[in-house]
Image (cartoon, rainbow, N blue to C red; front, side, top):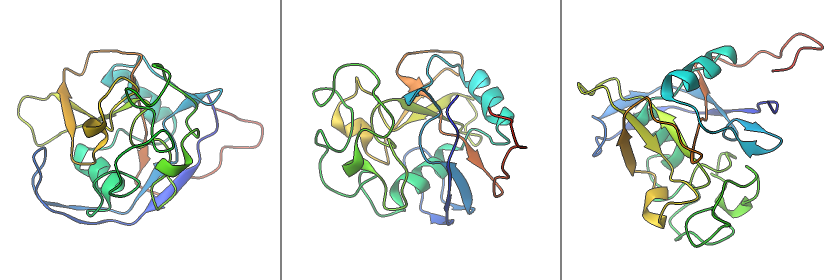
Length: 186
């Protein structure tokens, strides 16, 4: 797996949305890109497998509300701002090759905080602990998604056991990452 770069995103208050109640979001450390191998997102993970992989990195699967806060900063329509997606912003249906692409291939789509591929390329697993039905929520859209699926407020509810070449993971940490011991890679 490629090394993970962690970026600190300050917390705040997220107003209620379609997919979550109003809540405070803590300051968290986010992977700068979805997890990748040779620069391409890791896919085909169920939510339980994604959680295990995140745990190996000293991280976890974010909640849907945490993801929305990270993506939108509580003000943006899309992770990069309010402009509709173009080829420079995201790998979405009609804007890409119809498969996952390198996680740093769309510089215009970076969030102001420096996170890559938050909209498009691959859906990202999130948890919704406040929901009674225990479904998982996918966020961000994929290479097969229409532009509206890359909007920060959009989510797709799915059973946690599904897999797809269009679903990946962006883990989050509650505390600052510590570097692995010398000579150890994940």
